[in-house]
Length: 367
Image 1: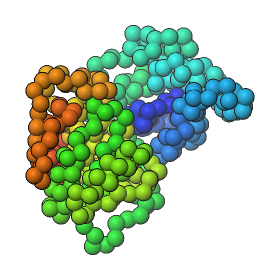
Image 2: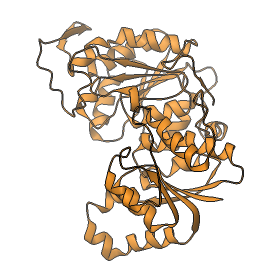
Image 3: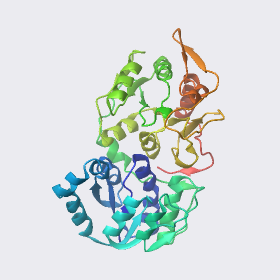
Image 4: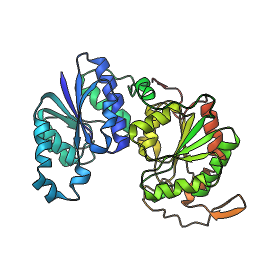
């Protein structure tokens, strides 16, 4: 059976879909998948052995210049590519108008969420078959539930396997030099200002990591993140600001690392999919439904009454919360991160690296 998955973005959402692909391919022999995804994320589906063809789409770029896109014929080429194959099923795993439109353009019986369990209810107009999936579940479990209903198998919620070929990813990346100190990755970049862990905290965490025998590697994706990465590196000796990396290279770096610390960002979900020990920091956002999901993951949340505010900018109006490192006193902003100081983060990461349990204790998460 040939199935098309429509899950175009974002990075975390794409990664959340992988366990459902693993479930379905194991439960129903002969299933093969193609996948429509934003052009920036085409590497991710290709890492799963049950995915044959990845079809890139460029909505993020097209919406900036819609008339240019139309005149260039790029959209027409995408549509023709999409319609070339007839599919037994087309599953919209995203639940947006744009993903629903893609599912309707493709040739095949369309599957999606019901109007009461979908992010954009008008998308249901594009589906032939609809399934109700509880909002109370984590995003990973929602997609797994949708696939289990589509293919009629019993879902085991005690096992979650992203299905990535980690040996191939590890082999395709440069291994650490023999005898080199182990390293940690700092995943500090995110699109919301309210999700940014304070720079002095990153700097102090780098000092703690170095003092405990770990080097630190810092990633970046734009000019603002590059400046922050340089500031983190300037606070301690064994911190390396890496060149800009592809997703495949980042996956290799994660697999060769001892662990990672992340804010609420797509790369944190990649670390979870690769079972890398990761402490993820949540202030404005709530990890209950969209946080990292898997083995060797730990979430730190804020106890402030206003958290999680789910706002792009911090709206805290209480008394200033301060901290001090290296003789410098500063106001912690966003304020919700005052409850997640570097010493606590280091303690939690060291415990994870040493084999301590993750956030979702009692569940077994397969590689």
